[in-house]
Image (tube, rainbow, N blue to C red; front, side, top):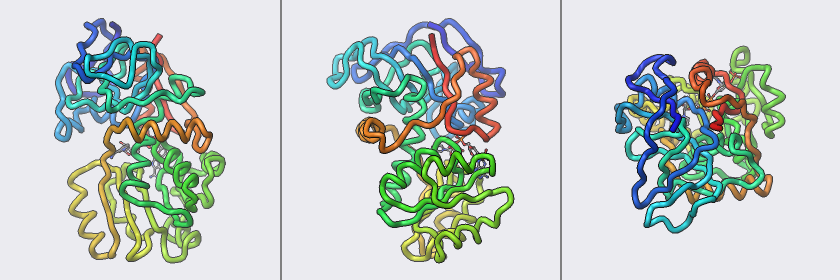
Length: 322
Ligand SMILES: NC(=O)c1ccc[n+]([C@@H]2O[C@H](COP(=O)([O-])OP(=O)(O)OC[C@H]3O[C@@H](n4cnc5c(N)ncnc54)[C@H](OP(=O)(O)O)[C@@H]3O)[C@@H](O)[C@H]2O)c1
Protein backbone atom coordinates (compact mmCIF):
# COMPACT_ATOMS: atom_id res chain seq x y z
CA UNK A 1 0.00 0.00 0.00
CA UNK A 2 0.95 3.65 -0.40
CA UNK A 3 1.89 5.40 2.85
CA UNK A 4 3.78 8.39 4.21
CA UNK A 5 6.61 6.92 6.28
CA UNK A 6 9.02 8.45 8.81
CA UNK A 7 12.27 6.49 9.18
CA UNK A 8 13.70 8.92 11.72
CA UNK A 9 12.53 12.07 13.51
CA UNK A 10 13.15 15.44 11.89
CA UNK A 11 11.83 18.23 9.68
CA UNK A 12 9.16 17.92 6.97
CA UNK A 13 11.61 16.19 4.59
CA UNK A 14 11.52 13.01 6.69
CA UNK A 15 7.93 12.46 5.45
CA UNK A 16 8.46 10.11 2.50
CA UNK A 17 5.85 8.45 0.27
CA UNK A 18 6.58 4.71 0.07
CA UNK A 19 5.12 1.32 -0.84
CA UNK A 20 4.84 -0.76 2.35
CA UNK A 21 2.96 -3.94 3.37
CA UNK A 22 -0.65 -3.60 4.53
CA UNK A 23 -0.57 -3.82 8.36
CA UNK A 24 -2.01 -6.84 10.16
CA UNK A 25 -4.88 -6.42 12.60
CA UNK A 26 -5.51 -7.91 16.04
CA UNK A 27 -8.75 -9.67 17.00
CA UNK A 28 -10.05 -6.38 18.45
CA UNK A 29 -9.26 -4.23 15.41
CA UNK A 30 -10.73 -3.46 12.01
CA UNK A 31 -8.66 -2.86 8.90
CA UNK A 32 -9.80 0.45 7.47
CA UNK A 33 -9.51 1.48 3.83
CA UNK A 34 -8.52 5.07 4.56
CA UNK A 35 -10.36 7.75 2.58
CA UNK A 36 -9.08 10.75 4.54
CA UNK A 37 -6.60 11.52 7.31
CA UNK A 38 -7.19 14.52 9.54
CA UNK A 39 -4.01 16.58 10.09
CA UNK A 40 -3.37 17.73 13.67
CA UNK A 41 -0.47 19.57 15.33
CA UNK A 42 0.23 16.25 17.09
CA UNK A 43 1.33 14.85 13.72
CA UNK A 44 4.27 17.23 13.30
CA UNK A 45 5.10 16.85 16.99
CA UNK A 46 5.34 13.08 16.39
CA UNK A 47 7.46 13.71 13.27
CA UNK A 48 9.90 15.80 15.30
CA UNK A 49 10.01 13.23 18.14
CA UNK A 50 8.40 15.55 20.72
CA UNK A 51 5.74 13.04 21.72
CA UNK A 52 8.03 10.00 21.93
CA UNK A 53 8.63 10.48 25.71
CA UNK A 54 4.86 10.40 26.34
CA UNK A 55 3.55 7.68 23.98
CA UNK A 56 5.48 4.55 22.85
CA UNK A 57 6.71 4.98 19.25
CA UNK A 58 8.07 2.37 16.85
CA UNK A 59 10.15 3.57 13.90
CA UNK A 60 9.69 3.45 10.97
CA UNK A 61 6.21 4.89 11.55
CA UNK A 62 3.24 6.15 9.59
CA UNK A 63 1.82 9.31 11.20
CA UNK A 64 -1.85 10.27 11.60
CA UNK A 65 -4.23 9.86 14.54
CA UNK A 66 -7.46 11.03 12.84
CA UNK A 67 -9.02 8.82 10.22
CA UNK A 68 -12.19 8.31 8.17
CA UNK A 69 -12.77 5.44 5.81
CA UNK A 70 -14.52 2.18 4.96
CA UNK A 71 -14.14 -1.04 6.95
CA UNK A 72 -12.26 -3.57 4.79
CA UNK A 73 -12.10 -6.50 7.25
CA UNK A 74 -12.66 -7.13 10.96
CA UNK A 75 -10.88 -9.06 13.72
CA UNK A 76 -12.70 -12.05 15.19
CA UNK A 77 -13.75 -10.26 18.40
CA UNK A 78 -15.18 -7.20 16.61
CA UNK A 79 -18.96 -7.05 17.06
CA UNK A 80 -20.10 -3.50 16.26
CA UNK A 81 -18.71 -2.98 12.75
CA UNK A 82 -18.54 -4.99 9.53
CA UNK A 83 -16.96 -4.66 6.08
CA UNK A 84 -18.44 -1.78 4.11
CA UNK A 85 -19.28 0.42 7.13
CA UNK A 86 -18.29 4.09 6.80
CA UNK A 87 -16.57 5.05 10.04
CA UNK A 88 -14.19 7.51 11.65
CA UNK A 89 -11.91 7.56 14.71
CA UNK A 90 -9.34 9.27 16.85
CA UNK A 91 -7.06 6.25 16.45
CA UNK A 92 -4.27 6.66 18.98
CA UNK A 93 -3.11 3.06 19.26
CA UNK A 94 -0.98 1.65 22.11
CA UNK A 95 2.12 2.15 19.93
CA UNK A 96 2.53 5.02 17.46
CA UNK A 97 3.41 3.04 14.32
CA UNK A 98 0.52 2.52 11.88
CA UNK A 99 -1.30 5.83 11.39
CA UNK A 100 -3.80 7.20 8.91
CA UNK A 101 -1.44 8.73 6.30
CA UNK A 102 -1.83 5.48 4.31
CA UNK A 103 -4.20 3.48 2.14
CA UNK A 104 -5.00 1.11 5.03
CA UNK A 105 -4.85 1.48 8.80
CA UNK A 106 -5.61 -0.84 11.73
CA UNK A 107 -8.13 0.76 14.12
CA UNK A 108 -9.19 -0.40 17.58
CA UNK A 109 -12.94 -1.10 17.58
CA UNK A 110 -13.39 0.86 20.85
CA UNK A 111 -12.14 4.04 19.11
CA UNK A 112 -14.54 3.83 16.14
CA UNK A 113 -17.91 5.43 15.48
CA UNK A 114 -20.18 5.52 12.44
CA UNK A 115 -19.37 8.48 10.20
CA UNK A 116 -22.05 11.20 10.31
CA UNK A 117 -24.02 10.47 7.15
CA UNK A 118 -23.96 13.92 5.57
CA UNK A 119 -20.23 14.52 6.07
CA UNK A 120 -17.73 13.70 3.37
CA UNK A 121 -14.65 11.74 4.42
CA UNK A 122 -12.37 14.78 4.70
CA UNK A 123 -14.88 16.60 6.91
CA UNK A 124 -15.31 13.47 9.03
CA UNK A 125 -11.56 12.88 9.43
CA UNK A 126 -11.29 16.45 10.74
CA UNK A 127 -13.63 15.85 13.65
CA UNK A 128 -12.46 13.15 16.11
CA UNK A 129 -9.32 14.36 17.94
CA UNK A 130 -10.34 18.00 18.13
CA UNK A 131 -14.01 17.41 19.02
CA UNK A 132 -13.09 14.81 21.66
CA UNK A 133 -10.53 17.19 23.15
CA UNK A 134 -13.21 19.90 23.36
CA UNK A 135 -15.73 17.45 24.88
CA UNK A 136 -13.33 16.06 27.47
CA UNK A 137 -12.13 19.57 28.45
CA UNK A 138 -15.57 21.22 28.66
CA UNK A 139 -17.66 18.31 29.93
CA UNK A 140 -15.56 15.57 31.57
CA UNK A 141 -13.24 18.04 33.30
CA UNK A 142 -15.13 21.34 33.16
CA UNK A 143 -18.70 20.13 33.89
CA UNK A 144 -19.83 23.15 31.91
CA UNK A 145 -23.44 24.19 32.54
CA UNK A 146 -25.92 26.35 30.66
CA UNK A 147 -25.56 30.05 31.56
CA UNK A 148 -21.91 29.64 32.54
CA UNK A 149 -19.24 31.55 30.64
CA UNK A 150 -16.24 30.17 28.76
CA UNK A 151 -13.07 31.64 27.28
CA UNK A 152 -11.63 29.70 24.32
CA UNK A 153 -8.14 31.10 23.83
CA UNK A 154 -7.51 29.92 20.24
CA UNK A 155 -10.98 30.01 18.73
CA UNK A 156 -10.07 29.74 15.05
CA UNK A 157 -8.24 26.41 15.30
CA UNK A 158 -9.55 22.85 15.34
CA UNK A 159 -10.11 22.38 19.07
CA UNK A 160 -11.36 25.96 19.42
CA UNK A 161 -13.95 25.58 16.64
CA UNK A 162 -15.53 22.53 18.25
CA UNK A 163 -15.22 23.93 21.79
CA UNK A 164 -17.11 27.08 20.79
CA UNK A 165 -19.91 25.08 19.18
CA UNK A 166 -20.20 22.53 22.01
CA UNK A 167 -20.28 25.30 24.63
CA UNK A 168 -22.96 27.19 22.72
CA UNK A 169 -24.97 23.99 22.23
CA UNK A 170 -24.89 23.47 26.01
CA UNK A 171 -26.25 27.00 26.49
CA UNK A 172 -23.07 28.66 27.75
CA UNK A 173 -21.87 32.18 26.87
CA UNK A 174 -18.62 32.11 24.91
CA UNK A 175 -15.80 34.54 24.34
CA UNK A 176 -12.91 33.55 22.12
CA UNK A 177 -9.62 35.00 20.91
CA UNK A 178 -8.22 35.06 17.37
CA UNK A 179 -6.55 37.41 14.91
CA UNK A 180 -8.91 40.14 13.64
CA UNK A 181 -9.29 38.51 10.20
CA UNK A 182 -10.89 35.49 11.92
CA UNK A 183 -13.47 37.45 13.94
CA UNK A 184 -16.35 37.07 11.46
CA UNK A 185 -15.58 33.34 11.37
CA UNK A 186 -15.77 33.17 15.19
CA UNK A 187 -19.09 35.04 15.22
CA UNK A 188 -20.47 32.61 12.62
CA UNK A 189 -19.54 29.75 14.99
CA UNK A 190 -21.64 31.47 17.68
CA UNK A 191 -19.07 33.41 19.74
CA UNK A 192 -20.70 36.17 21.84
CA UNK A 193 -17.56 38.27 22.44
CA UNK A 194 -14.44 38.25 20.26
CA UNK A 195 -10.93 39.23 21.37
CA UNK A 196 -8.05 40.24 19.11
CA UNK A 197 -5.15 38.63 20.97
CA UNK A 198 -2.60 40.69 19.02
CA UNK A 199 -3.95 44.11 20.02
CA UNK A 200 -6.52 43.86 22.83
CA UNK A 201 -5.81 43.76 26.54
CA UNK A 202 -7.08 40.18 26.91
CA UNK A 203 -7.75 40.38 30.65
CA UNK A 204 -9.71 43.65 30.31
CA UNK A 205 -11.70 42.25 27.40
CA UNK A 206 -12.56 39.08 29.33
CA UNK A 207 -13.70 41.17 32.34
CA UNK A 208 -15.84 43.30 30.01
CA UNK A 209 -17.54 40.06 28.98
CA UNK A 210 -17.77 38.57 32.47
CA UNK A 211 -16.92 40.99 35.28
CA UNK A 212 -15.53 38.42 37.77
CA UNK A 213 -13.80 36.37 35.09
CA UNK A 214 -15.22 33.40 33.19
CA UNK A 215 -16.31 30.13 34.78
CA UNK A 216 -14.09 28.03 32.52
CA UNK A 217 -11.01 28.69 30.38
CA UNK A 218 -10.04 26.27 27.64
CA UNK A 219 -6.50 27.19 26.71
CA UNK A 220 -5.67 25.75 23.30
CA UNK A 221 -3.00 28.23 22.20
CA UNK A 222 -0.13 25.77 22.59
CA UNK A 223 1.63 28.36 24.75
CA UNK A 224 3.58 27.18 27.77
CA UNK A 225 2.75 30.11 30.09
CA UNK A 226 -0.37 28.41 31.42
CA UNK A 227 -0.38 30.62 34.54
CA UNK A 228 -1.68 33.52 32.46
CA UNK A 229 -5.09 31.81 32.32
CA UNK A 230 -5.64 32.35 36.06
CA UNK A 231 -6.14 36.06 35.33
CA UNK A 232 -9.19 35.28 33.22
CA UNK A 233 -11.07 32.88 35.47
CA UNK A 234 -13.53 33.43 38.31
CA UNK A 235 -12.21 32.68 41.82
CA UNK A 236 -13.63 29.64 43.67
CA UNK A 237 -15.99 28.13 41.04
CA UNK A 238 -13.54 28.69 38.17
CA UNK A 239 -11.87 25.95 36.13
CA UNK A 240 -8.88 26.06 33.78
CA UNK A 241 -8.35 23.32 31.17
CA UNK A 242 -4.99 23.46 29.44
CA UNK A 243 -4.33 21.16 26.49
CA UNK A 244 -0.75 22.24 25.97
CA UNK A 245 0.22 18.67 26.65
CA UNK A 246 3.52 19.40 28.32
CA UNK A 247 3.87 17.47 31.52
CA UNK A 248 6.39 19.91 32.95
CA UNK A 249 3.65 22.56 33.04
CA UNK A 250 1.58 20.50 35.53
CA UNK A 251 3.32 21.64 38.75
CA UNK A 252 2.95 25.29 37.72
CA UNK A 253 -0.69 24.70 36.84
CA UNK A 254 -1.42 23.05 40.19
CA UNK A 255 0.49 25.64 42.24
CA UNK A 256 -1.38 28.51 40.60
CA UNK A 257 -4.70 26.71 40.85
CA UNK A 258 -4.34 26.29 44.61
CA UNK A 259 -3.28 29.93 45.05
CA UNK A 260 -6.24 31.19 43.00
CA UNK A 261 -8.72 28.68 44.50
CA UNK A 262 -9.64 27.31 41.10
CA UNK A 263 -9.50 23.84 39.61
CA UNK A 264 -6.99 23.26 36.83
CA UNK A 265 -6.09 20.29 34.69
CA UNK A 266 -3.79 19.40 31.86
CA UNK A 267 -6.27 17.54 29.64
CA UNK A 268 -4.85 14.84 27.38
CA UNK A 269 -7.58 13.73 25.00
CA UNK A 270 -8.32 9.99 25.06
CA UNK A 271 -9.78 8.04 22.13
CA UNK A 272 -13.41 7.18 22.88
CA UNK A 273 -15.77 5.64 20.33
CA UNK A 274 -18.85 6.10 22.55
CA UNK A 275 -18.24 9.83 22.95
CA UNK A 276 -17.51 10.10 19.24
CA UNK A 277 -20.88 8.44 18.51
CA UNK A 278 -22.55 11.17 20.64
CA UNK A 279 -20.66 13.80 18.66
CA UNK A 280 -21.94 12.13 15.46
CA UNK A 281 -25.51 12.54 16.76
CA UNK A 282 -24.93 16.25 17.47
CA UNK A 283 -23.55 16.68 13.95
CA UNK A 284 -26.45 14.77 12.39
CA UNK A 285 -28.92 16.96 14.35
CA UNK A 286 -27.03 20.05 13.12
CA UNK A 287 -26.36 21.01 16.76
CA UNK A 288 -22.71 21.37 15.76
CA UNK A 289 -21.17 21.58 12.29
CA UNK A 290 -17.94 20.28 10.80
CA UNK A 291 -15.24 22.93 10.53
CA UNK A 292 -14.05 24.29 7.17
CA UNK A 293 -11.42 21.89 5.83
CA UNK A 294 -8.56 22.55 3.43
CA UNK A 295 -8.06 19.29 1.57
CA UNK A 296 -4.75 18.11 0.10
CA UNK A 297 -3.75 14.80 -1.50
CA UNK A 298 -1.73 12.33 0.60
CA UNK A 299 1.31 13.14 -1.56
CA UNK A 300 1.27 16.68 -0.08
CA UNK A 301 1.61 15.55 3.55
CA UNK A 302 4.73 17.72 3.90
CA UNK A 303 2.92 20.88 2.79
CA UNK A 304 0.06 20.05 5.16
CA UNK A 305 2.37 19.61 8.14
CA UNK A 306 4.29 22.80 7.32
CA UNK A 307 0.98 24.72 7.35
CA UNK A 308 -0.11 23.05 10.57
CA UNK A 309 3.22 23.81 12.25
CA UNK A 310 2.96 27.46 11.24
CA UNK A 311 0.06 27.61 13.71
CA UNK A 312 -2.57 29.63 11.83
CA UNK A 313 -4.84 27.08 10.18
CA UNK A 314 -8.47 28.20 10.26
CA UNK A 315 -10.63 25.13 10.93
CA UNK A 316 -8.85 21.99 9.78
CA UNK A 317 -6.52 20.37 7.24
CA UNK A 318 -7.05 16.89 5.80
CA UNK A 319 -5.28 14.55 3.39
CA UNK A 320 -7.37 12.52 0.96
CA UNK A 321 -6.29 9.12 -0.28
CA UNK A 322 -7.49 7.97 -3.73
N1 LIG B 1 -3.78 17.77 25.13
C1 LIG B 1 -4.42 17.27 24.09
O1 LIG B 1 -4.97 16.17 24.15
C2 LIG B 1 -4.49 18.05 22.81
C3 LIG B 1 -5.45 17.73 21.87
C4 LIG B 1 -5.55 18.50 20.71
C5 LIG B 1 -4.65 19.55 20.49
N2 LIG B 1 -3.69 19.78 21.43
C6 LIG B 1 -2.75 20.91 21.24
O2 LIG B 1 -3.51 22.10 21.38
C7 LIG B 1 -3.05 23.08 20.47
C8 LIG B 1 -4.22 23.52 19.58
O3 LIG B 1 -4.66 22.44 18.78
P1 LIG B 1 -5.55 22.72 17.48
O4 LIG B 1 -5.76 21.42 16.81
O5 LIG B 1 -6.71 23.56 17.83
O6 LIG B 1 -4.50 23.59 16.64
P2 LIG B 1 -4.68 24.39 15.29
O7 LIG B 1 -5.98 24.03 14.64
O8 LIG B 1 -3.46 24.21 14.48
O9 LIG B 1 -4.74 25.92 15.80
C9 LIG B 1 -4.52 26.91 14.89
C10 LIG B 1 -5.18 28.18 15.39
O10 LIG B 1 -4.51 28.67 16.54
C11 LIG B 1 -4.71 30.08 16.56
N3 LIG B 1 -3.67 30.69 17.38
C12 LIG B 1 -2.33 30.54 17.25
N4 LIG B 1 -1.70 31.23 18.24
C13 LIG B 1 -2.67 31.83 18.98
C14 LIG B 1 -2.68 32.68 20.12
N5 LIG B 1 -1.54 33.05 20.74
N6 LIG B 1 -3.87 33.09 20.61
C15 LIG B 1 -5.04 32.74 20.02
N7 LIG B 1 -5.10 31.94 18.94
C16 LIG B 1 -3.93 31.49 18.42
C17 LIG B 1 -4.67 30.51 15.12
O11 LIG B 1 -5.57 31.61 14.97
P3 LIG B 1 -5.03 32.99 14.30
O12 LIG B 1 -4.63 32.60 12.90
O13 LIG B 1 -6.23 33.88 14.39
O14 LIG B 1 -3.85 33.41 15.10
C18 LIG B 1 -5.17 29.27 14.36
O15 LIG B 1 -6.46 29.41 13.85
C19 LIG B 1 -1.89 22.45 19.71
O16 LIG B 1 -0.70 22.79 20.37
C20 LIG B 1 -2.16 20.96 19.85
O17 LIG B 1 -1.01 20.15 19.72
C21 LIG B 1 -3.59 19.07 22.58
